Image 1 (cartoon, rainbow, N blue to C red):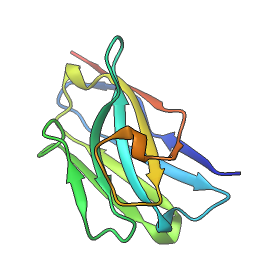
Image 2 (image 1 turned 90 degrees about the vertical axis):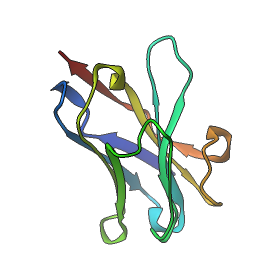
Image 3 (image 1 turned 30 degrees about the vertical axis):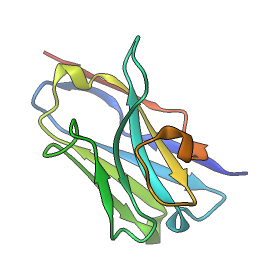
Length: 123
């Protein structure tokens, strides 16, 4: 059974950092492109960043450039999202998603999704 799970969310003060992890169970994530998205209350799901299956290519949304960094560790079957200088507007549920094709900003291209992890940034 293909499963993705996100870890590492929580409560953090504005200006702080968090690292989210995306883990795959029952399958090999290294053959897939992986993206991170988020959804704040009352808003649409928003693309943040994605990394190609081989790690050679990344795609960033403007909202993520300069503060968020994606990386992957194929040996551990994991993908990470390092988030720095967090702001109140970063409060959302964060999702990782996988695609067997090329990475895109559109969520429809991602076949597999985790259930999300809550990130709350406080003042």
